[in-house]
Image 1 (cartoon, rainbow, N blue to C red):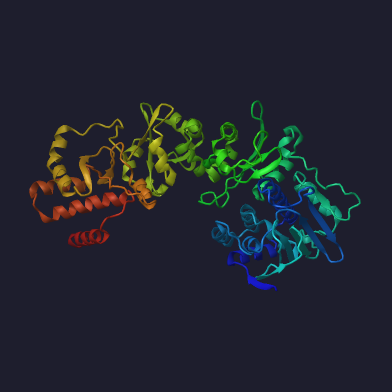
Image 2: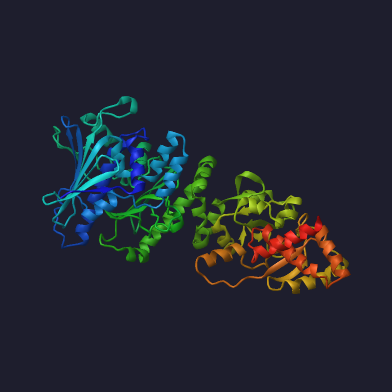
Length: 615
């Protein structure tokens, strides 16, 4: 008995975008279906190797295409792993994919049709692309090892019908009830044999399984079935690489760079890797996918092989085909396998050297998309840290638009400057307006602006570059070649500084005069090895108990508020208003660096009272 179910809301919205044909190149629907079929065949062969109790015939695994001109249908059939009833509901009726809501928000905000199409391609919707060319789609499937099959059908609107079948063949059959041809909308006649052959040759020639056309004069496969990674680079056209990338990544755009390499010697392997031009939606999501598939002697073993690339290179897509591994190798064993560790080391070095060699404009594209992920490598890849430091690009006070490399920063350093100056914070605007930068900017020193959350962590571990210390402008004492504050002036402020230290001892550990301030009255700094407030907050958000780090209040002796406070203190150290002024001074310094007041209502009440008395 069939039942009618509603699509998940996000799925329904994406289907509407497909039905209304936002993507101009509609031919790719067949690439997506063949790619799904190929994956199903890979999974069946792997399951038959791993599960000896599974009784399946793997002697003629293939994809079959069938054209019915009279009924105007195109059918894609495979005898692969198939799907259960639950699989169909979860995989076809729901887009259980991280980033769906964000995708739809961006789609609503993108006025240009081309931009919307690119976003869809970036997300990768596979099966749903069928609704660009079909009024109705019927799917029949049975999972290997199960006796009951499932039939699913939808016109791509709000609902779909689903029912159980007793006599479905193993595998999956997708039948498209095609829309009428419309050349203006680039909707071609997909019942034309020549058109189907053209699409398969263009997009799916490298698929490892035979793709056959039912009723064709010759039973020969439509595809060559040659593994691209096993062919010499000189024999592979750029278009072939691009289509293979789209197959393994489910991206609809061409890759930024292709890496084709071969390892020989004691452990032979071939690798075909791609650096995408766009970041996937799940790049920074906990359940996001790694990109590299593992094959052994052309046999698919696993997706998302974590043993082959470190997490910070999770955006790299492609295939590694190892010649000397067992077909039954597990993920756990892979992590410990010495040969795989050697391959991983070589892959990482090759990817990083390829990035280093990219022309400036293309590297800028890469950095905008993947720079945040690459910086994660500074935390856990000590072996390649120097290379990564050469690759990172960081915002700085040198330019409002263009980030800088550390190499370029060093070349611009002022005569006599020994440190690389930086400041971390929650945003560029917050850092640029921080009192900590005043003397640096006044004297023409460039400061790196580190506003990514990962920046807070890696600067704690990376202490130098090219022999130059990385120095936070918000920590320790600074020496900018300024004249030291005369001893007699320091002595003149000593009673006030001592009193302020006692008055604010719950929040600070010291009060001193500053050489880093030019216009602000005060700022708060840490000792050389203190944890920053932002990092402290990050650790707490992750559930780690962190003791509050007391910092140092620095005062600008040339500011009217500070000199006035000293005079008022000298005149009457017991005046009640002095304590309130001390609280306000500390609160202003805390707010200026983007900090949070412990008692905002008290601060605003003191400020309002003080303003009222000044009128």
